[in-house]
Image (cartoon, rainbow, N blue to C red; front, side, top):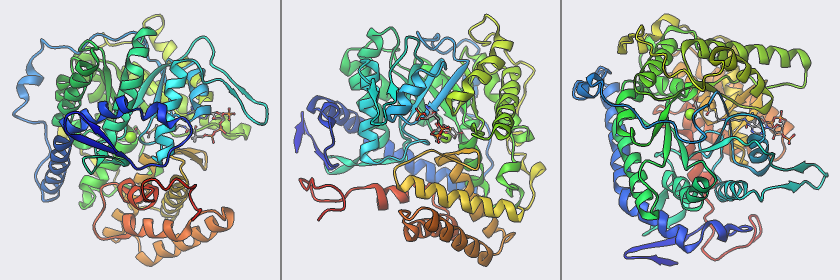
Length: 537
Ligand SMILES: CC(=O)SCCNC(=O)CCNC(=O)[C@H](O)C(C)(C)COP(=O)(O)OP(=O)(O)OC[C@H]1O[C@@H](n2cnc3c(N)ncnc32)[C@H](O)[C@@H]1OP(=O)(O)O
Ligand SMILES: O=CC(=O)O
Ligand SMILES: [Mg+2]
């Protein structure tokens, strides 16, 4: 146990791993402790406010752009900070968890930016969290090169992507670190450890400490992040305004506060990203009880649906009006070893990126190195020698809250195949997540926490509206669990069933499956000081 001046005590409850002490140094923990001390209570208030808003919307309050912040939207004089070094040209951004191989592969991929992800693509086991930080530090120090036992060499090239770290969202805790007896907010752990170790190193290397901020639900959450940035910079003597953060607009309540979110973070903002998968999840979670929000099979809800177009058009307009980058989202198709399937996946990704580039986005996300060239070619075609198209203000775009919510136009009951697919995806993804893998390719699609959330909340919604029989879902679930158990003898089938029952089949819809699964399955509750490997007693 360490005491952090003047009052905060920290306990590291996670089992020690190789070189973890380099990340969990007393000075780094003191720094995180100061952030927790300053902002822990405000985070709790924010979580309560989320519940209040959710209850209000569930009981019929209308969702709209706020009247009280109308002056922020009407004031044409403010802009966000200019693009920071390494973030001017963002035409291709690759995303992925910061595991060691992927860190090297992503940095070498030819993408301009690598979004190193502790949120949707990471299952936050203690090892993944601390090793991820170590990999980032090693990559920045250029000491990450290694050779696998099979003889495959991984080494950083000359032209590397700019690193942008996505810490976990405000809803999660890091239970392996306790400050004054309370689990630490996971956001502050991921942000704080990276900032402490890497901010100055990134500045020295000609870039800076850059972040993606996930799952924000309001302007107040953006203000909280901005205050975290101000204190973090002050504590380390780094000039204010050095940090840059791109906010994912991936909740329906954030969609009606995009401009306010940019405003709160304007000194540190590097734009907005259209996080389409969590956005769909948020729509179903918020309005799933309403029959006019009955969405069809997941595969049928595409980015050309009018309510999704309203969302992306508004995002581009808002960003460019304020001098900020608008970054596109993730097309879920991933490369395949089958040549025909591979070409089909490439064509779908290309189409998605073409629409984004033509709509005015300044760059977009890909999930795999083999997709970088397709995205780059599309944006090269539109941007030519310009680094972005921020000057293309979309004054032609007018989006109302009603358009963002015009789901009824695509509303339809699911097909039997759609039901089976969602059950199968959710269960197989849960199996991977419980094993420590936060992103997987299933049936040619990238699946991560956001896409799996859609799968499970759709099942909940279809049951609630009785467009699917409970007995059918239970039968399909058992059949899928049987095949999962046969294919992967290691899969904890009973845990996966119980997780699905609690998060998809229960009457009340839990806000995130990850809170439940984390506290039951990823938290290592062995007594402090018991450092025997897991499974040995
Ligand atoms: C909704 C959202 O939030 S989207 C953002 C969050 N989600 C993500 O970031 C998912 C990113 N993508 C991935 O994690 C992976 O591409 C997966 C899991 C979907 C597929 O990974 P794999 O099954 O390993 O794919 P595959 O076998 O084709 O990989 C080939 C090589 O490319 C590498 N690779 C694949 N995807 C990535 C990536 N995103 N970043 C870096 N390297 C990658 C693999 O490590 C592998 O390298 P190796 O040959 O040196 O071992
Ligand atoms: O984080 C991205 C998303 O689509 O969700
Ligand atoms: Mg997301």
